[in-house]
Picture 1 (cartoon, rainbow, N blue to C red):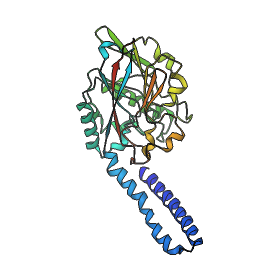
Picture 2 (cartoon, rainbow, N blue to C red; picture 1 turned 120 degrees about the vertical axis):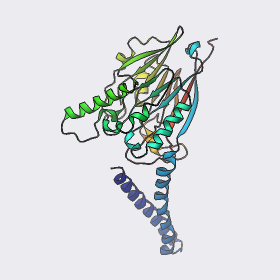
Picture 3 (cartoon, rainbow, N blue to C red; picture 1 turned 180 degrees about the vertical axis):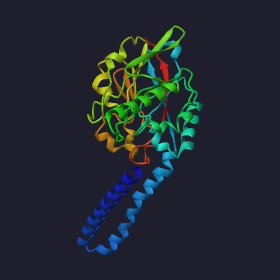
Length: 326
């Protein structure tokens, strides 16, 4: 599927480039420059697309970026000052089949960061739970002092495979759930957990996939249910789709920090701009609304196209810093 999609993309780009070259050459001919000669020269632009795709598939796809940021708040308890969270998202394990060494390198890089907690914001698999067959033992090596917290993304419900019936799909989706829990991950399905240090607590809240921007993605999230009993001094929400933040979180709750993924940065960007920004207002990096913050991680794996251009796989290190309320 990925190869077919890539070839179609390559064909479309090549046709578009030829049309652009032909238009430019036609304009040049009006001013006396030979069309045929210029068109032959312009045809070399057809090398741009395959060159970029090869670069994205064999170089940038294999180059994981570690982005570090500091999030400050007077609500962060003293015991959690300098607390280190590693956020990862959108592993899409199918994209690591045959690339187990790359997944091992990512796990080693995360562990080397010595996180207090790892927070995964959904899309563990791309198609079905069997993607965990080759990768589960690798993922089991992830370590964090206070554990690994996760939520489900739209792909984790196994809707992207042609099942014989709904029962098979539901069983496979349940397998994704059970296998995460078997790895020791705290999978939050419209619920919350406390992280406790001394007399201080923070709440980690997780909702099932909630897509407020694209209705084609199934939504199962229940934020009100997830918030029940979440009384930590500082609240962190894990929600896969960043459109959920503006629709139901920012200005509507007392959640301090929201972590999301889903967009992949469209796996391509130019000078910090991506086509995905036409669909999602919050699509990469840090956003603020008053005292509330959202961070959108662009993920580790891929769907549709097996490459990344200007949107390298991301590991995010978030350090919580307490500020004085004076």
